[in-house]
Length: 392
Image (cartoon, rainbow, N blue to C red):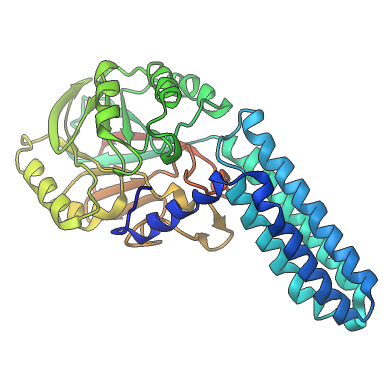
């Protein structure tokens, strides 16, 4: 078993994989026990065992519906996570919903049961939406960023950013992606890490599917990449694959890129999660930048923004947060895996002359987590660099 004790959040995610090793018969007692417990509480609260039987059977029906939905996802080619971990999470969540409703059963048993049933149906509907619909509601985000290094005669430059592909098997989202990117006619394509799902990061078919997907991307000025977190992107497997496809991997190095009359100093820093170490590497790369070039940073996480801004990076492209993947209306990301939490959760940020864009990414978290998105659709990012006007 891999142990990631240095990173508690990833350790917690790693533990969610364990139930995926259990057979269906081993987890069957869990929904049965919880349903029986909720039924007993309702029977005692309402003073009539019939209410307990109704609640217990209802919870078991919803458990079967949840299992059916989750088990259908890999059969339909939509996502490929284990069924058991999210199923157990759903069973526990539904049980927790049933407990406070029992407090109203003494006086209003029927209204309380109807409200509980409506809430349980809503949970199933949201689960269906989050797994069947939103992960495939791919959006294209356009952003125009002025830069003082572009002179009058040079045309704007279009950069397409793809992040957090998290390939497990190719889905309809992945198959649609090359056509969308081709229509955008990018001058450059940049890939900001987490190419595979953690659950499939050494799986031969996942690697073959990733290769088939990346081989379909083309850009006038080339394709450039950085790897994601070490738990997700295994360098010894991904470096040969990317090199073979002609994708330039920027691991603590920078190159000057000339495209359509523009000179770009393209920097990539390996993601160690240590801002001191990674910030030092960034400073070394930036010190070698040719005068008059636009300075672009690719780094998987947004956590180098304070250092990038103090060093005068022009454009910084990142991913990693998935925009939270599960967002609440009016609040946004619940979790981001960033040391700054919501400070750089998703979208465009500016500090001084430095622009940061944090992509919501394309795929979803692996481990034993549900392959779902809520209020956070996947995105392709199109950055247009243009000449800065007065005052910009």
